[in-house]
Amino acid sequence: MDHKRQGTNDMTLGDLLDNCTNPNSPVWEKSWQEFLNRYQNFIYKLVLNRCKSWNLQRIQCQLQEEVDDIVFIIIRHFIKDDYRFLKQFQNRDNPQLFLLYLSTLINRITRRHLAVHFNKILDNLDEDQTKDTLKEISPEAGWEIYEELIQTLRNSIINKHPNNERNIHLFLMYTWTDMSIDMLTHNDFYKPMGQNAIYTLINRMRNKIKV
Amino acid sequence: MSSSIIVHKLSIGKVLSIIQDDQNREKNILENYPESIHYYNSLKARFNKFENDPNLANSIFNSIPKQCCQANKSFLKDNDDFFIAYTILSKKQDIHINNAKQFIHHLNNCYWCFIEYNQFINDEYFTNKEIETGVL
Image (tube, rainbow over all chains, first blue to last red; front, side, top):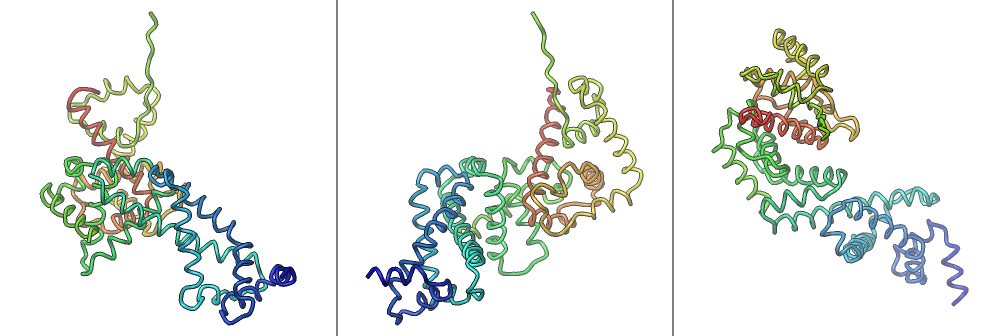
């Protein structure tokens, strides 16, 4: 048993990935233990730091649960589609590059998870609470949520129309900050739209997100 | 009893709002901002220059990039000329929400400029309200 443990400890990254991605390997289970020994802490720390960087009070309250959930999703991703993620890594003699490869996945999954979680929080809040919640978050998290929201809005619009970007902009001006429709139409730039048109448009955009 | 003077600094949104005040109360207002008088005068001179040269205002407004800026180097951060051009052109309705496509596209792509722009609109709006109600 000690001998086998010694065997997985010494395994090169290439061998480790080969064994982890082949369930018929006699050391498949041991290889996964070794994989987790080597990388679990790295994954945990990165997810934890990313979650903390969002500075979102509702996430900080249940930080450990959030981190556990995200780490589980990441590990599940390693197995998904016949270990595609691990098999796709090419520079098998370069452990440092593998850490970088892992960190891109970790960042992507953590970001997506937090954004979805954040959107769920926002769904249950009224407009004032939404604006207060947006004030809590760090600028970096704000940037990520903003980009995620823009993407969601762009994806939700099926028909390409020249005014789509304008509509998204108006929706964000209204929801992201303390801007009221009166404030918008007070500015010469927004005057041609008129209050009623802006109000209707914002409601339409809000329904698109909820769907 | 000692009296204390509260020193405020003017933002670009505030300055442009004061410059456009119809009732010409700038002297009274500027008494509250002794540290910003030089800044105000320099912006006012540029405002007048851009107003007399629409091509210059147009070319500054159209210089907005399409893609996202870097966090600490956003295009709109401290870009007073852009906001002057924006104010002049939107007042004349040369630019508005329905035709400034590149500008809108940039704001949607660039969180950092969006935040700067929001701050500007906020400052301008509340300064206008303060002038209207005589608070300033």
